[in-house]
Image (tube, rainbow, N blue to C red; front, side, top):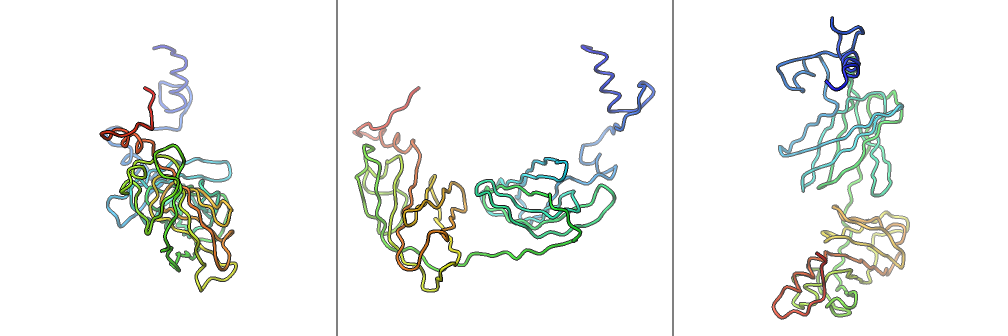
Length: 289
């Protein structure tokens, strides 16, 4: 009732009928849900997937470009998932684009022709726990399928040597400490370490595996990190990780023989507040309310 002319303009854009002067391209389907309505007129889902895991949830966002399509996918589960994802796209070879590293890599696919407008490209995808990335269709192709061989990493060595820890000063922890094996700091016997909040640096000297040859690709798997880690190797910053899998490619800085590794880990402020709340504790942190 606010603007009759604007309302009629919208009606003309959406529907045809006796009440409008222009013919629209839409239709009204009553008494059913959106998925069933689209299926009834032969419109396939924009994205669909098949997974062997019943609890797989794979929300997406689709951006249509003049010369292609960009899909953003995210795994909402705290565990890896493998899915065959069907995209309502054809004639273009897909790539995976990763926002955290800037890498753009090709991916296996197969294009299946259907009714006009419902052709689809199926891609087998693996997403790690809570992982997300872009699937981008830009490169025109006449090939109906492509196979990209996955290169799964193989363990070659474990860093079992003791770790030297150093802590930011003035936060209750000692300047340095030794760890024979890795452990969560909040399980340490020393209260200053147990309730430390800030950046702790882990360092050790390690030798490259006996099978290593110059130019080989090597990944450093940090296991679980809480919550953010910056990796340095031989004085060179390699990268920052904040999500699983906590892996860093160290190929650019590793060398045959001994290598100096430093991992700077930042944890949460609440850990210090928990320490300050202990009976008789010296208050180190503060909050502003």
